[in-house]
Length: 111
Image (cartoon, rainbow, N blue to C red):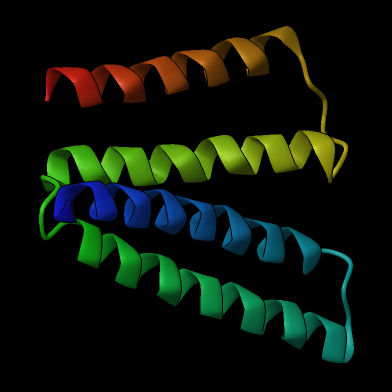
């Protein structure tokens, strides 16, 4: 049961990594108080993500947990870029995003 819970914690940690990337992206056009609010959000999610990753690695090997964590964050950041920040969704971006996801799934199954 603890291993299952730590996988859930790891997924939440990866989503927090996506959240801090979102906050960072929002700072691009922010000024004054709004800028510092987005920086505070970035710092909060950054720390929360790292703490949850550390908790998850108590039962999940680091060689699996870290790539899954960064992969969730990377995939989330690319999807945010496409859907929120209106970055291009080119064939090659989608192709490499797909290969990233397949690589992470592959690591889980061979580990």
